[in-house]
Length: 112
Length: 114
Image 1 (spheres, rainbow over the protein chains, first blue to last red):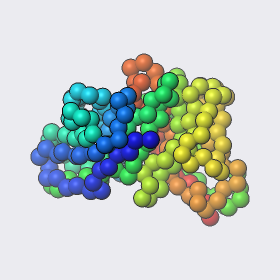
Image 2: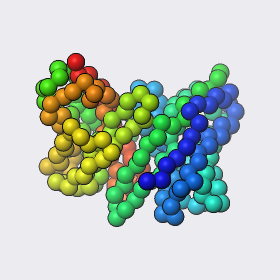
Image 3: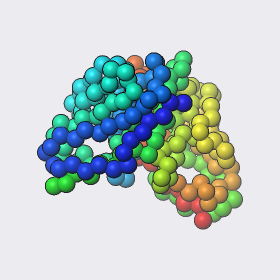
Image 4: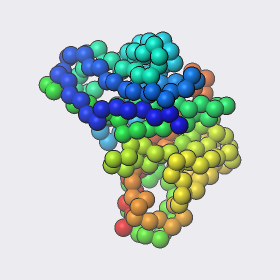
């Protein structure tokens, strides 16, 4: 299975943009890039996903490199509620089998 | 929020006893998953189900069994609990149109095996 590599931790100031990197150099052509986050004492929650093109939603933006070997999750204006562990995941999809393989993620700390 | 609940939310049990965790959904989603989360390992898939009575093993299935007799319930059983199975267990669901690419997670069950 293709793996992802993320920094263990990052810090950012409140109300500033945050760029969370992810490397996935062995990604296959059909793997979707997913981002989830886990707030303290909660289950993970979906943030965003993409295949080749950059994506935006109400929570974040996802920038995908042209060769798809890396991607960046962008939080445009971090708040204290964005402090969480962020997981970059390649969704392995085979005939509807929607398995996700989580790594250890990036722990994001927001500084007031 | 997706209608997904887990029971119990907390459980302490002794080594060698059987334990069953329940995941219940009200969303009629096709896929259901059981994960465990331990420090330093992130979430690891134990078993998953792609329909009633259709299940398969995940990454860390040894010591666990599952059953899904109806769409809304997915049970995880530890036949004989061991201390290494002390963990936080999360259930997740996915698979209807409009949410095909998202997994929704339950609140988790904290299991302690003494």
